[in-house]
Image (cartoon, rainbow, N blue to C red; front, side, top):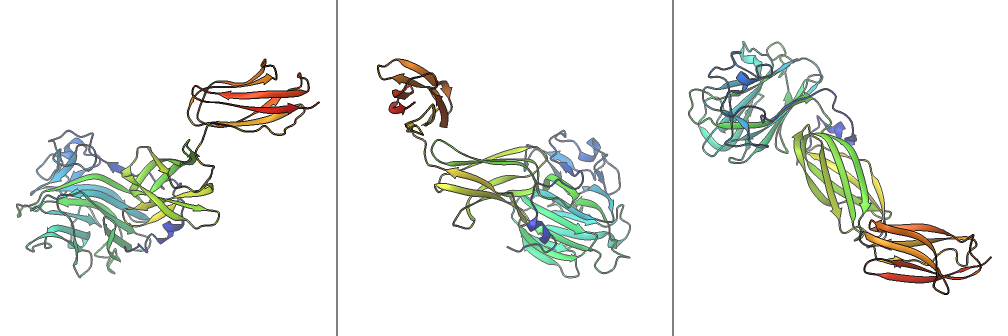
Amino acid sequence: MKKSIFFFSLLFLSFSALIQAQPFSENFEGFIAGQQVACQDPVNWTTWSNLPCTAEDATISTAYAHSGTKSFVIVPGNDFVKPLGDKTTGQWYMSFWMYIPTGKYGYFNTLNTFPATVSGNWGMEVYFGYGGPSGPPTPGMGHLLSVPAQIDFPFSHDTWFMVTVMVNLDTDQAEFWYNSTLINTWQWTRGNPTTYAKRVAANDFYGPSQTTGDECYYDDYWFADFPVPVELTSFTANVNNLGQVVLNWETASEINNQGFEIERRTETSDFRTVGFVEGYGTTTEPRSYVYTDVTADLGVNYYRLKQIDYNGTYAYSDVVEIDVQGPLTFDLAQNYPNPFNPSTSIKYSVPESGNIRLSVFNIVGEEVAVLAEGFTQAGSYEVTFDASNLSTGVYLYKLQSANSVQTKKMMLLK
């Protein structure tokens, strides 16, 4: 897999940082199916002619959806636009999901200038399923026009795929990604900023009226200044009653998140991947994750998350540490110290939640103290027995649950 030079510095960042600016995202679930998009939301969407509610406007569809139940569809005659605010500096990131049925075509472009007036307004164009501006149908092939030479790449019909455009206006560099594959890197102004302005102005989704095969669905649109992909808010590790490590983590938002590799090491080994959990792609909703490592070694284990983007970039979380002592059993340990005066510690463990009772008896069977009683979660515990008011002698202490009982002796010497 190719790695992006443009975002190389991200590899060394913790992904707990906040997104630099408020992003724009849309999953189209709040729109009315069968009605036009810009007609319902002219603040964020428009058409090539800046005329919502006309034939150029896209329609909300329930035929296919990447998330939820709705997307927008582009058919012949549509010329639908997402204005991006005429950005002239900074690093900008556009992504969305596309679905093209077998036998159908799709197209979008990113504009240096909008409204467009000259041929140099197209920073890049991508044709899916037909060969460029006037070429014959090419099922399963995409064509990127961003430099004098056309860049061809395969794509899949009848499945959702993600496309990403990244433009660094400060360095005049751009990238186009298909899922996790970098298709091309180029100079955004192509060496001619007079014709190709160093600006990010709009995304245009077009269905040429001269063709009859255009039918492309779009969902989960995202635009922001270059973001850290995932905002991680917590990452913890615990041992369950089977001696397995349970990892829990939460995110506040995600951008282009393919998922998390779970990596583990011990005191004597390097980090290695032990599992993978899929991410939610792009979302502004808090998400919770859990992974259970059933192969953890006894002793201290260290864990970290490797968050991986669809475009191949990745970042690591902080490391969490957990001491694994093996599966819990119903166990009553010998008190320490023993003999003792006047107090001693007693450790015990219960493998499942329930009612327990830990009590102390003298040698003739009279109960002299209750150290623990009632409902207890599965786990390991330690209590202190203070025998200041008792006389020298042998005492018994007993741990009892609904299914088990253990008793041990201890000696009080005053």
